[in-house]
Image 1 (tube, helix red, strand yellow):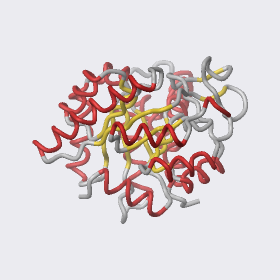
Image 2: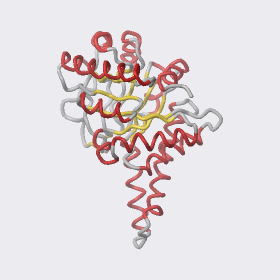
Image 3: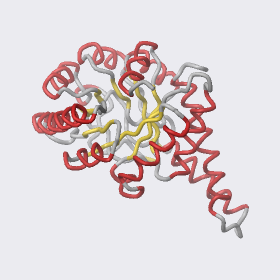
Image 4: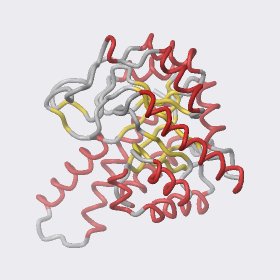
Length: 297
């Protein structure tokens, strides 16, 4: 099986993107996996499972690694695990040591200099472990603040800019990549974490994405994908986004399905029965996003 790095390179070359979907439990894991497995059975569409610091605390760091590894090995499937939004070297280290395939160091709220220092520390550790173990661990850096929570929003999060000087500059992106050695970069290009309660999220700066990709020289990652219009996804992927994150949309689908099921079956107490409706709802969302990201629609 190819490495995650190789799948990302292949996606970049084809101008498609790998879908990154966060999970909080095994129900969501099965939803994402089943959606991917059914998309192109003969090709085995690669997927990234994301677990944030909060999700890791709920599932367990080694437990999350064991779950994804078990699916990969049983089905011989290109499913990879990413430590989403990690705010300290110690927690990046813990994820790497547990067997994660990639980890994001999120220093977007730090000064540029401190973001560089800590991101490079994470890269150096990943390289050391990769050299000793034969693994190929990727480190993603984040440059530009887009918020911190995947939830329904009534307004743009405080401190988040969706245009102009608040977005990631291509020059700073190039400097950041050169000084840290990160494998992937998540820029602020009009995207926000979470999704607005009414209407669509702000439009993405597609020209900026293309310029950053060319200038920085590494594959880009789009965070805060939930709520983005389809045409922006397609254009962003063509411009250089090799991975796209979806979380809030999955959470909303899961909760709505559970609420409806429990209303319709108030006496049901078997979790595997009412959780199954949540699984189906999440699978539907993931399937639609994977078709879009792989340009199958």
